[in-house]
Image (tube, rainbow, N blue to C red; front, side, top):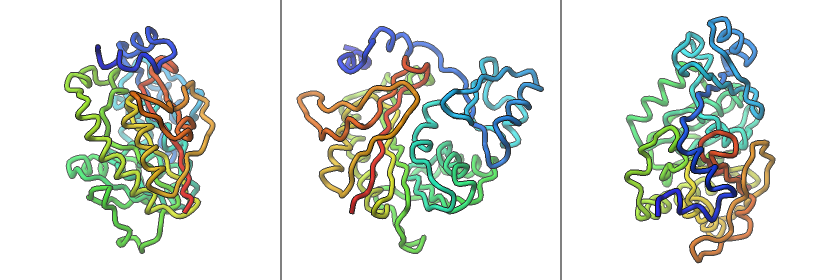
Length: 302
């Protein structure tokens, strides 16, 4: 059985799902609203002879059917950032208000960090954490190109994240977009599944649980956390939520998402999960002609 066939019981139209996974991914950019507006960016691209398609569910996302994201002057000048369409979902769901304190727990190379900064109107503070010093260099470079000034970068394991450098005060919101088995990126990276193993899935799930637990611990009561992955594996998605719901004071809350999606699954491989995990959203590649994604929204209750 192939890796994708493993998920046939979860997918509404498995043949459409498999066909979508074999197609190239559309080229999408996010307009950096710190520097410009979607209207100005679209006009600039069209003036260069680059056709643009607006993405219906998100004003700041543009599809470039005949162009690579970085091959135009608006990108070089920080007006645009290449970002896969569903990759923009977690920060949009987190939806921080200007002036708030936000933790991006697995931040590099910075697509979601810089999206959060833009949603905050470059106010408040984003603390962007990553444990890979090489990827942090890319994060710094992207933040500088996009004109981000409200972000502090820390090099540490997110499971041991310290509030001491930032006054010890809990965050208003946290984004937990964890490293994963990346099955949902197969359209962008066709070799993703070559080294896939169930052992790796279970191993990385342990790290995911630790990062999400730490996010709950460092977010104030009533604060919001978004947990997301680009994998289909319930072991890395609903099972992680189920574990943290048992260990920490939080709950999964529902949210609106105009993209087509499926609900989180409450049972898998002889395991049953807390019914709350059904409030999470699963986005499969054939739903919206995107990559695959999982996204859950939590509230800290204590």
